[in-house]
Amino acid sequence: MKAELYALTHRGNAGDIAFYREVCRGAQRVLELGSGYGRMLSALSGPKRKLVGLECDPEFLSLAKRNLRMLPAAKRQSVRLVRADMRSFALEQRFERVLLPYNALYCLLSKRDALACFRAARRALEPGGTFALDVWNAAPFHLNGLGEIGEDDATPIASLKHAGRTWDVFESSRVRRTQQRLDVSYTYLPREGGTPYQIPIAQRYFLAPEIADLLGRAGFAIEARYGDFSKRRFGARSAQLIVIARAI
Image (tube, rainbow, N blue to C red; front, side, top):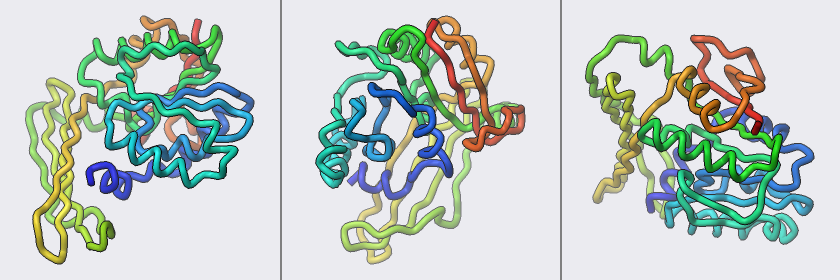
């Protein structure tokens, strides 16, 4: 249930598929960290590419397997799923590209965890390989005062159909800016009555200078930073932070 409802609620950001396709152009070996339910894997799969999706959650892996089975055989056979922790994984092969899309970095709840992930990504890359990630830009949010804030949406952020029922989706959040934490909970209420379902998502957001420092410590040089997937220049008020780094 969790993976299916999450997948219906979180469909990625406008332009991210096209962006990562361009990042991976010409690459025959690609690794995605935090591959979730297989959205990006499905889009990047191809008969001339070896694609590995790394995910630690068994429910997401199960849904990804079902989603990948719907691909044409040539694409389906190019994808391999691995259950592992992106902070400590070690794979036999090396990759030309390693991707960490759709805010997956923020699921790591400390600088130590993020550094471990970046170092594992560096070990997985061929010399000179490319590491690409995207997150929402936390700077405007973080600078809007300090302290603790709890926020609940009184109206649903979405309505969706699943398992023959209509679900209204409500979002609530708890902010602790001193710890750079933004913990979000999604509540799914079935219109037909019944037990609501909740998906909590713990997040630790990182500011752009922190990400740059951690990448440098892990053995990367930043080649580009963008504020959106159309490659606008990154600035303090950008909605997103997209980083392209090269293994050195």
